Image 1 (tube, rainbow, N blue to C red):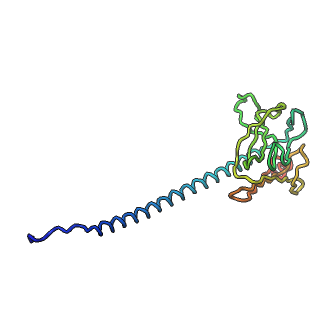
Image 2: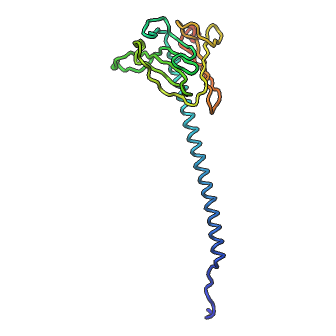
Image 3: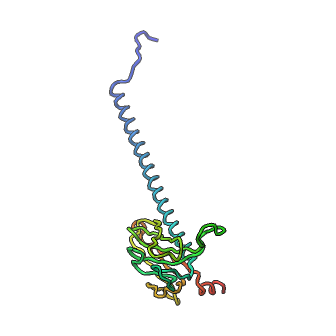
Amino acid sequence: MSPHSKHRGFTLLEVLLALVIFAVLSLSAYGVLQGVLRNDEVSRAKIARLSELQRAMATLARDLTQALPRPTRVNGETTSTVFQATRFQLDSEDGAVLFTRAGWLNPGGMLRRSELQKVGYRLSQQTLERLTWRYPDAVTGTLPEAQPLLTKVTAFSLRFYKNNEWQTQWLSPNELPAGVEITLTLADYGTIQRRFLLATPANSTSGSS
């Protein structure tokens, strides 16, 4: 090795250039990471929203398909009403419905109530709410328990199937419709429509034929 040879280091310009390249790569990697995190957050929000929508539809299906033609007290008075669906009732901002359903689980009758449940649906502050009463024949002044079911709902309407046609008003509160059509307008997904078949004698006959 020559005695005159020297180890050559990096110049200041080369060091600055390396730092600039490293900074650019770091910013690019950070941008990619932020994009991945944003996409993950959006995906989680969409999954949560779809789960909320599926739960709401499953609850509606469970209640409506188990509806019974069982009259309940209205304002503490005995009536023949078995299915009440009037717009703005139950303090709703749009459509509303009230009926009695079977199948409220009470294993062995251990709880001090029957397996019948008085339920209702209403729209309150852009939230579809499920109303429940502990007893079908509640006394005057008994307030229902309100369960938020679906958010971002801007409109809630119902139609009812009877005599081979769909009706926008239910004028036969002393009987069940053969079917109920639910229409929900959501702020993010637009209009969603579902139809449910109720357990009426006509449906039982057609189903067995």
